[in-house]
Length: 201
Image 1 (spheres, one colour):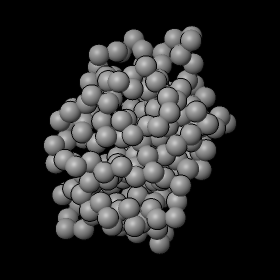
Image 2: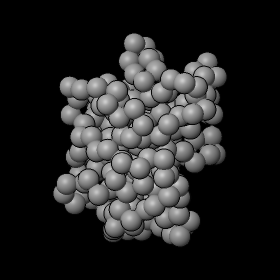
Image 3: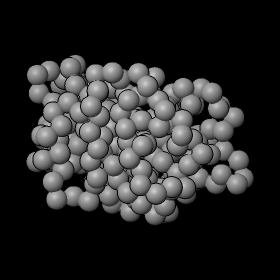
């Protein structure tokens, strides 16, 4: 598999997770480890160029959960304004121009490191599509990889639009890659999602 040696990974971990209940889902323990730590380790184990975690709600607690890892944390001062602001905060924090940027969600700890490496191996901007989206069981999932040419658009995102607008505006540039990884569809939104970790929520 291909290491992410020149790919920056941005993990979004700034949301309030209101559907989960009073506790922050990213701090919930799975196999004795906080969800956000498990997610971050997936990216770190893929040998990414850099791993950036965007915090906001419960920032200090999430940052404490990541203490001792090689991730770099950037805080979104206005996480309530929407996911677009967190994406922009992460994109603006990329230190050196990578070949591509991979966007992960902090509440998807079941993704396999091998899946990140497979997505990276399919990135060939000189021969065509430069946005790579994983597909499992006929459904698009996460993480999504964007060529470096999209970094200015990611940096300029606002509100709750997220990166879907870029996918919508450039359908001809998207390459769907089939993956044998239900973790690409599984995110933790509610307490019930903890019952069946191999099912999509």
